[in-house]
Image (cartoon, rainbow over all chains, first blue to last red; front, side):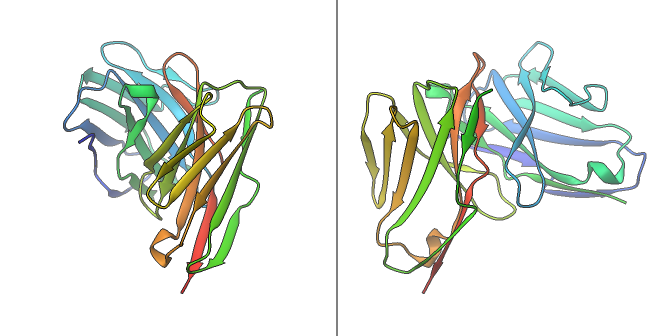
Length: 115
Length: 112
């Protein structure tokens, strides 16, 4: 149980375009999901906390107009990187709060490359 | 500010030996601490959780200890195997929404 699916796993886009990443909890409902960014050999950096039916809470320094988060249902959160630039190239990972003692279940990640 | 540190960036050991990874934290009094495993290009996978009132927790070849006086958790893998090679992350809960703060991780390499 507790499977989180993240799609796509890999995307290449041109500078200036927008990219949407989906995160789904497949066998449980997740009121809270999280979006992380990870650079090579670095730890996970929390970007935002996504709550079903309400606005996301962004971490300091994360541009909310650039990284749009929508959590419209209990099983789906999306992250849209708007007007992507090469510096947005990174590994983006989502997770869902499993509820019990805040154990998080992670998606497999999305490798974004902006040309 | 709250900090969580994993002092060793990398740990290389021989197959069959016990790997011991360290996690220290400051300015924090967590009710529990979590350990995750991350393989290259993948999301982390939850391994173990230990509560503040538990000294030790075991799961198969894994053992975690939690010393709230030293503000430290140790993560042990006994009889290590090359398949145990991965990055191991410790994490603490921050905030009411269940946000986790992660350490930078320790990359474990088990040589045959």
